[in-house]
Length: 229
Ligand SMILES: Nc1ncnc2c1ncn2[C@@H]1O[C@H](COP(=O)(O)OP(=O)(O)OP(=O)(O)O)[C@@H](O)[C@H]1O
Ligand SMILES: [Mg+2]
Image (cartoon, rainbow, N blue to C red; front, side, top):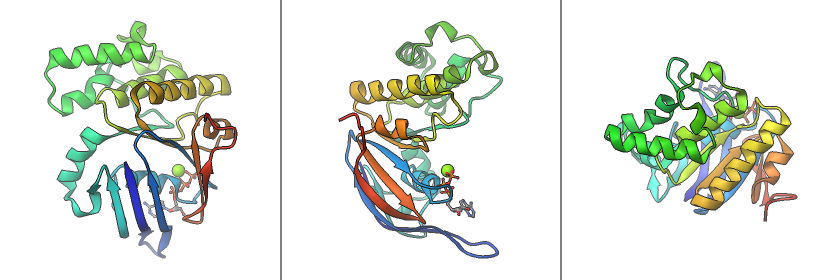
């Protein structure tokens, strides 16, 4: 699903910051992988490259066999729409849109007809256990519920790759556990490839594999301790 070959990412500013200093790894279809590492070690940068939100300074990033660095911004964004979905620590919901409208957004962008979109929204809201909140505004929901809306929005396009940047970072541990159980069950049911950045050991142990970054390099890559398999 993902192949990275000697990926370097540096940012030019007053001084050059090397966020990723040569990453080579591959993630198979259907894996559930945690990425851990100290603040500033390059976790979010890596996730953004995997999702084609950004391109490497050098090296190759292949997503489902496609080299994103060789594509135009437009091609990349079309590719992203069908292949990759994201969830974030801070949910990133549209505050003025109701739950069902938030979840429908990626389908509207993709030009899916309203009737089909409505049916798909209903289905994923049921899948995350929020069908009874479909007409609420994000403000009217708890943190855990908001993250479930964000997960529903990520699922609605059926993208094969789900990237999550600290999805439980804003939640208390009980709510965090529920979100992890939900991601785990999505992974089991749909076979979605999931890559999750986390600071939380418990979150990492919900995954099958743990990659540790330090100073923009892979420090360790193996089975997650206490992992699900
Ligand atoms: N747009 C940018 N411009 C310049 N430097 C950046 C930019 N984005 C990230 N960096 C730098 O790259 C390095 C890696 O950042 P990144 O956000 O990937 O870290 P992280 O591991 O996700 O950290 P955290 O756990 O704090 O979220 C950091 O030193 C950061 O300051
Ligand atoms: Mg980060």
